[in-house]
Image (tube, rainbow, N blue to C red; front, top):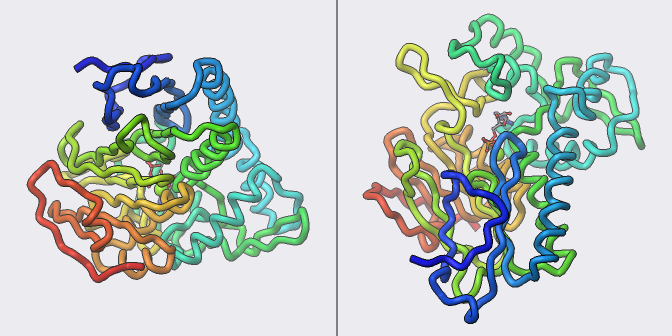
Length: 353
Ligand code: ADP
Ligand code: MG
């Protein structure tokens, strides 16, 4: 099949989007310009449709600069604004916190509360202990139970933080911020706004399967593939984007190791201190990327028993959860959107919203 796409950079195998209508000749619809950026530990593929080459080039340069800035500012593992916050939080004294982190902090607190604290970006110490965010620390051996128990006992929560004007303090010195569960969504939302503010009407920002899309690439909608959690590079299901939407997936196959026949992955249950159990992946559709990102993480932790309640409380109306047996749990609205490509047992929940 001939595809009329201008590639500005080589794309990787991570691409899971079918550019619908790309077998239509270029005179029938405008070109799609693509560019890949490495940020937030993944390849971010951006596609723009219905723009001139100059506009696309300018947008790609801006996206590069913005993603570089955001990744650096919100990475607690390097010398950054968030790392400075974490250092000063330990003192339990008031300090002027970083303005570049404050909006995330406020939004993360709301999302954490709505998730009954299952999305808990205050437990940065526990996340660091597991070491999935840094290659040097990834040992392939779980941390010792005693250290996990000690960190759990300190009960870090976003509600330990107090704000007074430009100042912040934590009542609990054990709080350590880690926005790994939603910074990518927050950043993608910022950048889609930048694109739409500059008049772009058809775009997709895809960070390894977590994405926000607007408009359409020609006559048909953006088509999204959801990866099979246990079959590498296999599409489990498709869905088409309607208007302006985000699709985010949290999976136990993204960052993990196997130790003594057990899988240990990067989504930590704040109630146990261990990787959340019983789920392989959760996919959420939502108008807002930051909410979609936090919700996918929270619903993964919530599991088969609690995902429905937490989805309601976080204002999410489309959920697909693949449990440990490969059964797909979803709400009726999600069922109308999903087209399975693999034989999948499904269980329908009561409606969400
Ligand atoms: P990814 O970033 O791979 O798309 P997620 O959005 O699910 O995956 O986020 C996982 C990351 O979020 C972890 O690597 C860690 O930094 C952080 N994290 C892990 N468990 C939680 C949790 N329960 N609440 C908040 N953040 C978490
Ligand atoms: Mg997330």
